Image (cartoon, rainbow, N blue to C red; front, side):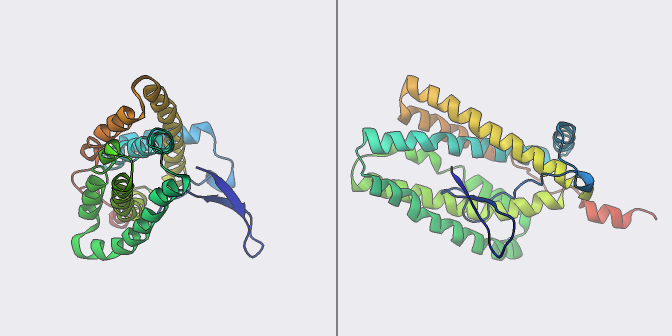
Amino acid sequence: MRTGTGAIGGSEPRPVRTGMKVIGGSEPHAVRTGTKGAPLRFGDLFEGWRYILAHPALRPLFFNTVLVSGLIMATSPLLAVLMLGDLGFAPWQYGLAFGLPCVGGIIGSRLAPRLVARFGRHKVMLTAGTLRACWSIGLAFIRPGVAGLVLVIAVEFALITCMGVFNPVFAAYRLDRTATDRVARTLSAWSVTSKATVAAMTGLWGLLAGITGPRVAIAVAGLLMLITPFLLPRYDRTPHPGRDLARSPT
């Protein structure tokens, strides 16, 4: 995924992430400073990891989101090799296959507040997080021609729509379950782990594809995705940090 910079109204340039998997409410950028504006240190990251792993609601969500991100991004270069090389799709067809489904991210993010208002945040997060794991396996069955192109568009549209619902709900849930004085450390540790996992799994899946071929490697990632819903928090029993402070004696 590429990044660019841009300044609007004289503000400080900030990274602009582009790509098919970030539309519809991407994960918030980690706060890069600790307390009192000091640069974030490794000790702060360690504290963030310790807080996440000790938290009964954040821990399963952490492993779920990190693994899902890694599996999705690890297959992106393999899909390019498979479609543009082995299956002979034209570059414009590849662009269409992964550009058109991004509309699903917009649809999902617009649906998320309505679904939460009707069914509750935890239920929506659990359902959308489960559904987003069901589609990637379909990419292992791509065939040449129009049928294969339609298959990719349908799978990506369903996946990105589910992510468009899940991402903003997950972001709100995570912040609500994180104590105010731990937000910077928690988000930074989360972001660092996610990026490192994506890099490691992309390299690992490249090696796997070199041995088995891109289609088999994509299928393995799709099968592993089916396991990720079991890492979602099944029950919403963790009290809100704000409520705890309100109930505590002064």
